[in-house]
Image (cartoon, rainbow, N blue to C red; front, top):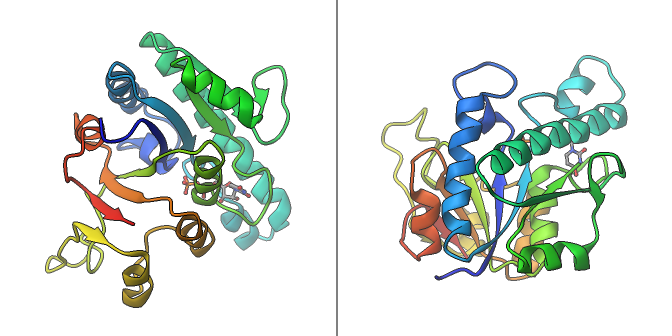
Length: 234
Ligand code: UDP
């Protein structure tokens, strides 16, 4: 295996499948199966999931809501998604733990790094909910932060596109894909990989990022085995 411990970042929107809002149970099931397959290979898996399918703080602020209030709602949305994924994983026979950055002890453990790594060593999937616990951040930043804290080998950003392109491939048919990029190249070319806070944190801590298509079956396993799918930034 090329990677022993991974942090998988999924966006909330990915969970919608073809819906406009909320969670598609079929998509959830597919993701659980993908994750199960790499657990079977002995890989340690931590997950951060976004909340954009339910609520985004910026969207709330655009409608006149206090930004901080909206951001906390966004963080709670990530907990709903995390719980849904946790259920789907357990349904598939995978042991899991949910740790949140905002305390809610009836449903999750608080985030404790040593406990998280112990769970991983025991083969449990650890899902980190409620982002960083702070407004004005994103789940990309939370994913990067947690990846560094638990000493993950790589952050795998699962999207519906199969990597980083010269332009948005859903809008520009002439866009071409990069196989690898350095952090500096991403800056120079002005490419949008993650928000700047998350991106800088990765660079400063030498945490490689792989952007890949999570919606194609078997891709996660291919990546773990070192196949060159997606775009690697390091
Ligand atoms: N959020 C936050 N702090 C964090 C992580 C998330 O305030 O550390 C809020 C923010 O309002 C954001 C929402 O949670 O809009 C959902 O997260 P994000 O937009 O990153 O989810 P994704 O786009 O990946 O679904």
